Length: 171
Image 1 (cartoon, rainbow, N blue to C red):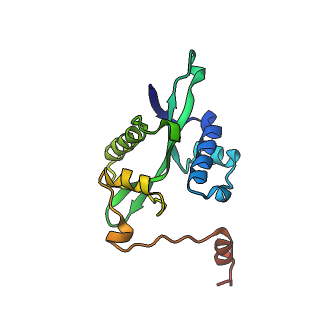
Image 2: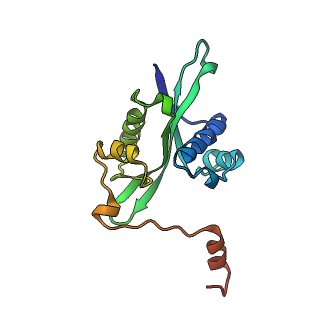
């Protein structure tokens, strides 16, 4: 089955959100997806994009309008003051029925090439602890589990806590 990778365009936002929701369902976290198409559009395709996205699509029967989006990778660049630029892979998903065709490997190859061209020192990402297939997928490609190797922990400050901290006199 033929597929191609391309840079996401504004018209892909409904498909990106669909795949985000599919991934969340796969990870049994579907209820946590609150993002809207409007927010995705503004945040990824406005004057200052907060993320970049690669789309994997397969061709349908005849025209190019028959293309079906079957996978994606959402990423952005961060800066580590110890080592410099990093590519951060935020979301990465290929629909179940299209796995095993090399799409995921090609997406990672593409992102690795991009990281090297932009002089990144590495690629960072988070994987759910119970997502063993993905953990093995990344380990086969040289990924290190920093929670094991270096003892790092992931923290989040939610919106209500941000509001509290941003309010003068609150702590």
